[in-house]
Amino acid sequence: MLQPSYRALVTLPGVGRLVASMLLARLAGQMVSLVLVLFALGSYGSAAVAGAVTFLAIAPGLVTSPIAGALLDRHGRTRLVVLDYAFSAVVLALIAALALLDTLPVPVLLVLVTVNSLTFPLSNVGVRTLFPTLVPPPLWERANALDSNGYVVASIFGPAIAGALVATAGAPAALLGIAVVFGVAAVVALGLHDPGARTDRGPVLVDALAGLVYVVRHPTLRTLAVSVSLANVGWGTFFIALPVLVLRRFGADETFVGLLFALTGVAGSISVLLVGRVSTLGREYILLALAMLGEAAAFVVALAGSGDPRLVALAMIALGIANGPFDVALFTVRQRRTDPEWMGRAFAVSMALNFAGFPIGSALAGFIVPLSIEGALLLAVAATAAGGIVSYVGVPHEDRRESVAQVKSS
Image 1 (cartoon, rainbow, N blue to C red):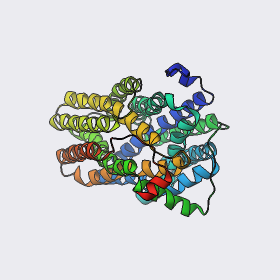
Image 2 (cartoon, rainbow, N blue to C red):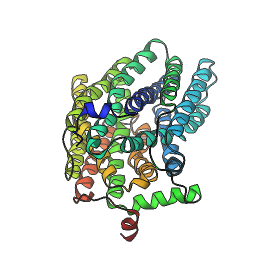
Image 3 (cartoon, rainbow, N blue to C red):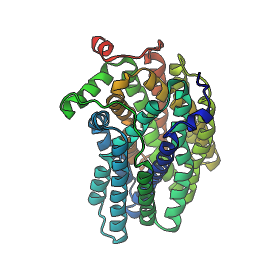
């Protein structure tokens, strides 16, 4: 019988390469998110442009996620993951080149960011659905902790490196460096074995719509779509409010912004590895609710410390601690309760709906922050707390995998 341990996990065939490419890509992703915000604030002097860039870097990809999920179920995950990494490298290099030539007006930047977002679900969902196909169920908590920790580690080093690069070499040079990292991630992922089954049951758009219907009718995935998206409205708002708070009220530089985000990553890394060692079975709804309420409390601390960098740093640590139970519970409950043949389509739609709140929060913050940073932080508190309440009340307490037939009959 397989004994659950992190050692057993990393020795499974393919897991090491998957983790390596994932870490590189997520490091690049964390860097580019912050670099684009700092670039917009520095080059155009506008929080509204920063909010629009963040929105368009995510939202169009969320809209195309159902199609991405259908393609992943049909054609396999590895080749499409590699395609997205390579495409991101090309687009970011183009943005950097235009910025260096001083020929990057706001509309062109927004178009390029939008185009880059369209393929993002291929890698985001592809990697997430490779883990349960490569890893047996007894190791899912640890695999999900490792998956989450990929984001966490990236959030430690990505913002710190990005902030330092922008402060010393400028945003265009930072974007060029990020393009190189995406390129290396693509090379590492080449040839990664995908043991998942392929499905080809009709037109792609029909499959994509079927995935959307499956999620909407699925009791757990439907609730997560509402609760996690609400929590991500808070995160999206905070992602814009924090740099403005640091740069304009504290008078610090981009390096300090990166270090604050890195604090969240350090605390989250410890938290997620500890939570990954215990079974979440039957307790996912409690862990999700407590984690979201913990994040809301952290935003309250940031609000109280909007004039004190030390309190803001404390809030960032609290956010990281709350991230551990949130990620492990979210990833595991979605795996346990989704029909294996529908993981690509269902995960693509579910992840898109879960994350939809982030670009919405960022766009709202672009308009609210110039009027009141405190107002933006209050929105973050309210949205995240609401997500916690919805999770506790709405996620079914009974653990069961919903087949397509069961979902259709519900």
